[in-house]
Length: 281
Image 1 (cartoon, rainbow, N blue to C red):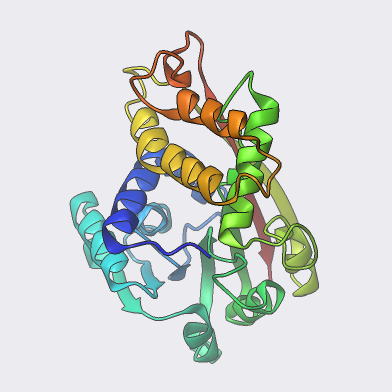
Image 2 (image 1 turned 180 degrees about the vertical axis):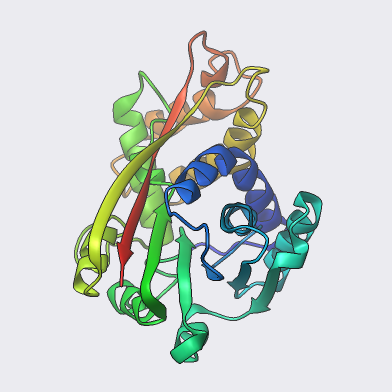
């Protein structure tokens, strides 16, 4: 499992929040939050979901953002203040088990949002975690599991075989299971097993072109994606079937300033086919 220091985490959280903002807002807009008063954001990170939830639910709603990292919550509060919704939100250093355990009666939530948090390594048993969140919902409450779907993304169009091996190296580096009941792609399975009704899957692609029209793309690639993939290639590339030539090729394609830097190719694009799974109690 990879260790991430606070500086790297802050960079990741800020950069990822900016890049994912349009699709997070789109996803939150599908939840029908108007009139819902108690909203929970589990694993709020830098607060991209927190702000979107507060805006969508309206001024009378209160949104609780919880995270195990106090530094992340500081970023979330700062973001909420800048967005003008700080009076609607409260943050707390906690994990989902703590919050779900005390949610009963009138303290249950009308909506719960969890973005890239029900994940191997974050929780010991993802299916059980989803069941606990479902139990924290008020009658007709909605649970929303959002994932950036990182490992199904297109980062290297035209270099598919190398891309597959890089993503496999990343999965190995993070200790993510190759398959089975805890695999990150089983959100619909977990929702169904939790007994939620009207379970729905939405695919919301985040498409990026590194142009002046979308200034979040290059920072996302160069501060988040490329460092992560190259570190994985160096650590676990051989285990993922990468030859020394493959690793050298990845270094050339993913290093800004090199002649073959992939982002400078005319027509370069990336696609995150993000997933939103919703279910009602």
